[in-house]
Image (tube, rainbow, N blue to C red; front, top):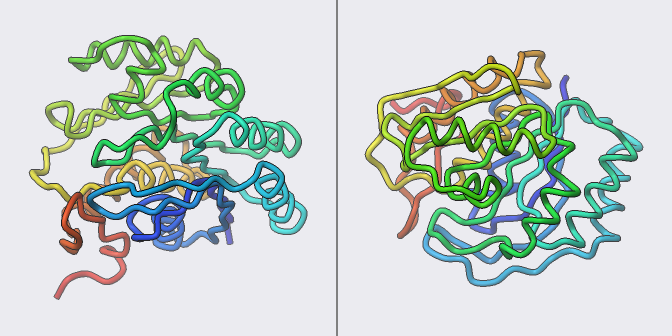
Length: 263
């Protein structure tokens, strides 16, 4: 059985963060493990508070995983502080895991900040170079690339700029900000575009967490990066389409829609 580790924040409402990651991994038939870096009091409507786990405890959680059940892929999500970023980067350098997927989580779906923008420089310097694939959405890509993104051509330029900072592949996600929910994958040479029929829905809480975890799961299962992205996007689209309609804000996805189809 393939094993995948998520290093991310905890979402008590279950739609995003580590909770979404573990559901996604289970839905892909891989063994999910988790390292909690922050406890987030949030729901579908707002982020109430964030409490970071100490860097030492983050490091010890990572040690506990790698000394016993070595993951076949690692997904990294919310890293809210420079100290947290440096702790994770140090352990990535130590253990050198294969298939590192980094989702540079900066904002919740309701727009609330999950990372101080002043921390982006630390993310770029210490964490981003470990990424086999980085998966920023439009607002995150704008921060990292230092440019405005209005068109798919802008997405390609942003991907070039981000790739130049050290990651091996960049997936700029269009989502609701781009017609056709266009995603652009860049490997330093070639571009791949992924496009679907736009879904008119507010049930998008945890889509970035879910997509990056699905990519990591598919990489662990042996798919190439372009194949892993294509399969992950198809899975997330299904999970959005069959969302259970919970909460008063941006609702969560149905992570097990392919396992427990609607009657």
